[in-house]
Amino acid sequence: MQSEQPFKLDYRIGSADADYRSQCRVSALLEHMQLAADRDLAGMGVTVSEMLDQGLGWMLLTTDVTIIRPARLEEEVSLQTWHKENKGVTWLRDYILTDREGTHLAEARTAWALVDLKRRRVVRPSALPFEVKSHPDLSLGEAPSKVTLPSELSLQEQYRLTVQYSSTDSNGHMNNARYADVCCDALTLDEMASGMSRLQISYHREIRMQEQMIVERSEVTEGAVWVRGRLAEENESIIFEAKLSLADSTASPSNQ
Image 1 (tube, rainbow, N blue to C red):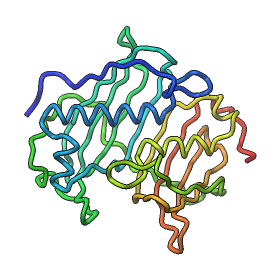
Image 2 (image 1 turned 30 degrees about the vertical axis):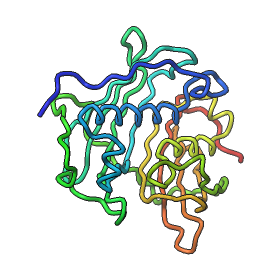
Image 3 (image 1 turned 120 degrees about the vertical axis):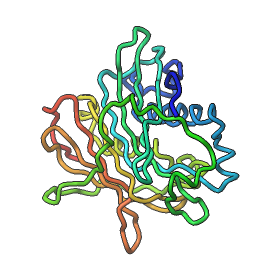
Image 4 (image 1 turned 90 degrees about the vertical axis):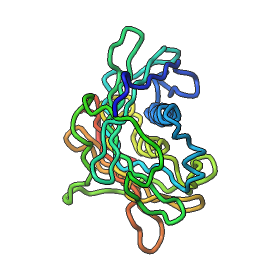
């Protein structure tokens, strides 16, 4: 079943959204993407509270964001989103961020899964007792590819963090938007100044409050920095892998 128009969220870039360059942080964009998706689904009767009552939640598997031009502090923007289709257990959702003139500022393709919160397991789309309208005719491209670090890449530990209250959400784990901050915190000031043209993140497992993450990164390789988070426990299982493409590929290698 199709609806006529994708959901649209209009908002202004506020002080809490902006970084030291007065540009919208990527994590703030991810937060608004999450909010827009929630409101789109709520308009179909699939509210967050209804999901929790059913013991269900959404888990982001992979996000691929292309930044054409960073939104600026106090700029008025519009964020469109739509559920594109299901592929197996995967839910595909696309986004477009535009300025007041309709010029594209960013585009994103995401892949989600429906999760049984009690068992912490992925379930099939048929487990959702609601109808979710789709837009199979609208697409920004294929499903986002899973991020996998090249085997020959050397990573160095940059820092460690313990997940605290401020990073967690109603599902009890670190919210997906916070991972963008984790990645950006691994960059040097020169790399941040060069800007980011694309952010790709694959989430392999959740990390919960009071668990510790080891954050590692590569040198700048072919204009990109690879970042990985590992659980700081005996098994050191991988939490996420990411690729940050720099807008200025001449940025110097990290000396952190």
